[in-house]
Amino acid sequence: MSRARVVKLSPKGTQKPVSLHPRPSKPNNQNAAVPALPPGIHGAQVLGREGAGFAVRTLDGQIWAATLGDQVEEAFVEECLAERRTVLVSPSLDGVAILGAIQSRRTVVRDGHDTVRVEGRRVEIEAKDGISFKVGKSALRLDPQGNVRVVGQKMTMDVAELVRILAAMCELP
Image (cartoon, rainbow, N blue to C red; front, side):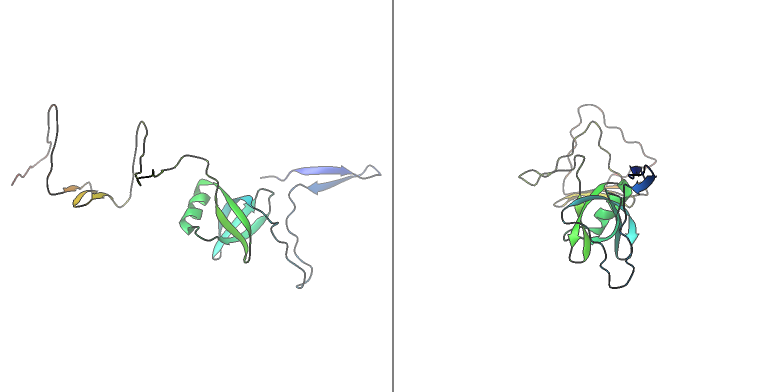
């Protein structure tokens, strides 16, 4: 990404380029203060891992080392990095903290009865190691080898038309 430049004209008419995105300058001596993120909440992009935390670029172009804020999951920030989502950062006692991310699309919501509903013309769930649906003593399990297991005390099938079983072998006790 190229940096934009603004040209200021001096009283003599000479041009002097100025960066629109100044970076914190390195101090000349060890006792000089290191620049701090201004107070408030700032939008930023996660650039990658940096030590125990993450490197983030605020919307003004400055790059900061950031740690996770309270209740922010590391996997969530990794997801924001992968999806290039905008995160929110703020100054903290330790430097810069990642507070969360900007919600820009719908997500799964629980209603007042703790019911989760996913709706769409088509719903796809994909997993690498397996999927399990469990309710009490009943379960439906799918594994990556193609095995499907239905577990329960009773099973009822309400079918208006035809039930077709295609298998090389079928056992009924």
